[in-house]
Length: 178
Image (cartoon, rainbow, N blue to C red; front, side, top):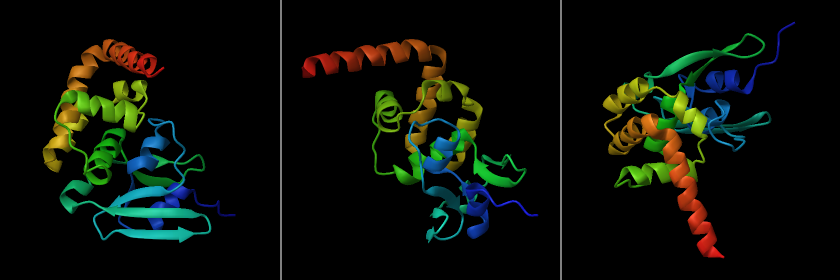
């Protein structure tokens, strides 16, 4: 008897080549607190959206030169395999493709985006690889990703003090609001 496909495997099969990325991948890795119901993928082909009885699948175009870097093969609990962006690539894709309208002028803008807008978990950032972020940044040619790299390089050494600083800053803002 054949096992049912997981949503992740279906996402790869419905439209390809494709790899899960963006908000679904960030949630898959536990990097963001939100539950993401639409399976978001990247593809070197045209943008497509499929609404099916089992779920909604969105495929966002990413230039073929940028597509393959940082994609890995994962397995489901029932030993089916699917392509998914690494945590670093999923975050870079999110910044590069979905939040491309945002403007970062300083590292603090990136800090605010990561912790306030995306609500990224601190522990997730600490597990990420600066080497992977640098490789992706080199290929994507996106100034916003340079701020991510700078933030990460700065934050990796002092992530704890950075978090404490942010908590103080937001606590002060909250107290002033009352």
